[in-house]
Image (tube, rainbow, N blue to C red):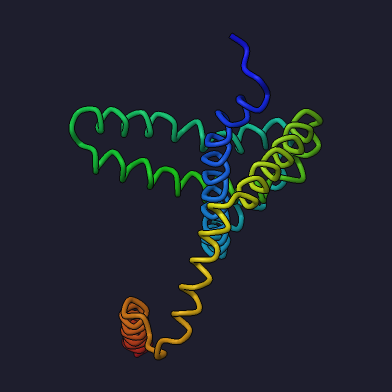
Length: 195
């Protein structure tokens, strides 16, 4: 039985929306991971490692770029195994952690090896095709009525939050207090060693 193009579009539209949402989540994780890894890269040994990675040849750069995904695949399988054997929360936590760590590692490796990877013709073509497909899917998602409704709701929440009295969010206060204590202890420790 052959489906008409309009019926096929109606059947595949939810899948496109799910894929677009996953791509947006992946983008968010990618940006978060890239920022975190850029911060960690200030550590001198990591800076030297990154300089070495930037000097790799195309084949080696491709292997290094693919390595985190390959290394995390068995971890995700073990997490699924744990979930199947009654450890759902542990398995889900492992999958989320692996996803965040994998996105962070791949984002940084991509930033470091991108110029070298783009010298591989098939990789450049595949990347161009994927980015164009991703943009089309995300554009379809953003043009949908549910997306516009969610955006309107988010704007209303932001407007509501702006009208609230300005108080610091309690985790921010706790983290700032902890950071101040840590700096004071570090300063006291360095004073003790100077004497």
